[in-house]
Amino acid sequence: MAGKQSVNGYTWFVATFAAVAAGIYGIDSGIISTTIAHATFLDYFAPFSPSIKGVVVSTFGAGAVFGVFFAGWSADYLGRKRTIFIAAIIALIAGIIQAAAVNVGMLIAGRIIGGLAVGMMNMTIPIYNSEMAPPGKRGMISGLHAQFVGFGFATANWVGFGCSYASSDFQWRFLLAFQCVPALIILGGIFFLPYSPRWLLEKDRDEEAYAVLKRLHGNVGNDDSFLRAEFAQMRDQLRFEKSVTKISWHEIFTKPSNRKRLVLAVLVQVFTQLSGINVINYYQTDLYKGLGQTGHMVTLLAGIYGLVGPIANMVCLYYVDTWGRKKTLWITGIIMALDMGLVMGLSGGYGDSSNHVAKGFTIAFIFCFSIIYSLGYNSIHYICVPEIMTMAIRAKGSSISVISNVLINIVFNQVSPIAFANIGYKYYSLFICTNLLGAVVVFFMFPETKGKTLEEIAHIFGDEVIVADLDTIKAKIGDAEEDVTAQEKGVTGTKTETMR
Image (cartoon, rainbow, N blue to C red):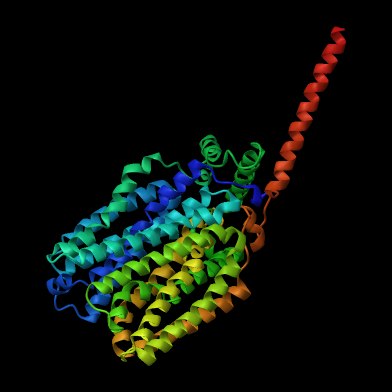
């Protein structure tokens, strides 16, 4: 069944438009990494020490923690769509505050508010797109979130490069104001997005759910029996889950299968941050400066770096439903460790030398790290978390896992400037170890979920599933239709004989 599935234009529109909001996160990452490199910014907020730099970058994560907590409630009670709308309003306010900042305190306040919006987006959009996608293409559709994070990051880096030619405060104020762009796009089009069909079923709005699902998956398969089978499976399993469980924080920790889900969700988010990707993303301009790059070349390299990730991520999206989640994750972890080892060795051996060729290779391997990460972890941690959760705990369980990601991000953003200043290239050794550890854990602990519906995945965790797989349901619907057709023909035949 998975191989026969396709994605219609409406589903692409809905998933892509929702993923535009993910660009807020990418733009923030790219904006702050180039903003803190501009001379006018450093002069305006002088003295801008490594500890202050860490605070400006990391406090964004503090806001994200509260945003994720709020979305854990809002996504269930207000809906995924309304939560995205609220986050877009907050993101717009945050961008205005940061662009108008007159001191570090105001800048930090804007960063915290911006983090609140990004936390909500990062938790809600993967869930929304996961619930919109046909099962055989769920990896591709859910992975659009990471793709637009990458697009946002690349766009911000190139805008930062362009602003490096300005000489006034416009150089950094325009950069920070640029964060408002995706928020305005979302606010302008959010009303055209449908509610999640699973959320509608959870609220007993069955007719609306079927109408949305028909628009989303109406062309999957050769007839509408797949659509009806998917709806029946979704509705019946959700009704069963709703009768035996309730949406609560208590349910996450007291049920063994849910605890297993939570552990896996937290682990994939933790290892995503322990890869070291955000350390490089946020502080790449400092790394280039440490390798002897100066002036416009620093922001130019940041712009090129920002492009390689989204290109690699498109390859991942195309193949992720074929490769699977588990294999991609553990192989990626091993290769990232090897690449980080090369960056560490070259930085230690040639960082202070005049060997420009070796320094060029060091920068090249920094770029390679982004490519490798984007082929694996970048999309899959957004895909994996919502799909292993049941409807009853999807929002709340996802929020806990995303918070674990954010907390580790806060720590790294705060300590990384200090670590680079004190131990330099030796700091990379931490990420060599954590990437290898992540590969081992994924290999031995993680299940494979590709191609299964969100309802069927419950089998993997030992939950009771009262519905059959889609192929079986589809076959039963087809058999029932044939029986009805045969009966109708029989009745028609009898009437004809009687008339004779």
